[in-house]
Amino acid sequence: MSTLITDVQVILTAPEGINLMVVKVHTNQAGLYGLGCATFAYRHLAVKCVVEDYLKPLLIGRDVSAIEELWQLMHQNAYWRNGPIENNAISGVDMALWDIKGKMANMPLYQLFGGKVREGVPIYRHADGNSMSELCDNIQKYQAQGITHIRCQSGGYGGSSYGSVTSTAPEKALDGIYLDSKKYMRDTRAMFDTIRSQVGFDVELCHDVHERLKPIEAIKFACELEEFDLFFLEDAIPLEDGNWLRQLRAKTKIPLAQGELFNNPYEWKFLIAEQLIDFIRVHLSQIGGITAGRKLQIFAEQFGVRTAWHGPGDMSPLAHAANIHIDLSARNFGVQEWSGTEPPNFVIQELKGPRDALLDVFSGLPEFRNGYVYANDKPGLGVDIDEIEARKYPCVNAVTQWTQTRLRDGSLQVP
Ligand code: GCO
Ligand code: MG
Image (spheres, protein in one colour):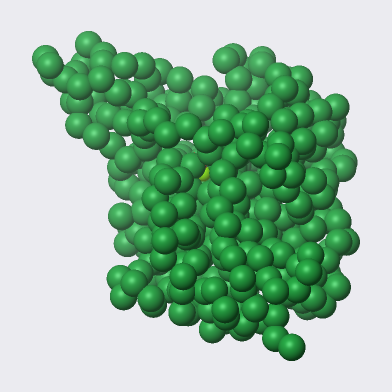
């Protein structure tokens, strides 16, 4: 008897105050269901609509085993394709189908991807601080937890100098987050100088430009940071200016990581085929889930490009688990961004409250221990959700403010 899809359900929850969206695919086999991540924190209602009103009617009655067929069916169904809303909706279903596949095979997903090539996944954590001494303390706290790769920011993305409308903006300039790229670059250079002199060179350091520079500034900045021997420089070039990576690559030896905003294979194909980047770090649900992610990982392997999947707070533990299962089995794995799903005694104290709530809603999360993250050996993704607990933390639909970043003249600059 075939195993058929009987329902596709959306579960919204925000245990840490971040809108998370989980898709639950139900089947005609008693007790067999799959869970996937469709989190697009700032447009969750639009993704919910695509899943409930468009994908569910398309999928009901179809065979769960045909993941490749169903992915393509969802992808081409609206004719126009490759956008973040559709890709996240597809990802929710795709990850859930892989979860079901693992449960049917009675194997954790890394087994279906060829088995482990490493027992644990090395991760990097993100450190910043209000002062250099706070930042260095945070780096050392992570090192004490066995963490070998640390991403450092001086006062958050874009530096700490910005505020709302400044004296440099024209009259009647709109409110927003005002960036000062020159100051950001100066402060970041000084930050790495201090870190290297205080913490030494025996730790891998990363930095996220977060697209907050013009390409020519990014080239200068990358060259200046070379002396600090970074593990990688992230998103130095904005998504829309991808062609500038050719110039950046030609001018600097700094390893480059790119890709959390990618949605469309055209955005990454040439970067990998021309070896313009060292690390591909897409957000799995933004490209359509595990099926698309595995294809990308194997494509990158052919060109010596390593993976460093995006792993921020705005993805559910199901997506973190999907990252980890691919990482465990990928020969061209580089490092995994980890925003932490470990029990409170492992994390810096201020995260304790919300982290408890996350652990009440989700169980079976990948576990961090002494520098490495481990998947559990349950079939599928290994993560479950308590729907009653999930309902206690409703998602909020509010206008997104932090993306309203502006230059000194008041015009918008990508966030
Ligand atoms: C990163 C990121 C994130 C994003 C966030 C947007 O982890 O590398 O750049 O922190 O800013 O996911 O919501
Ligand atoms: Mg980033």
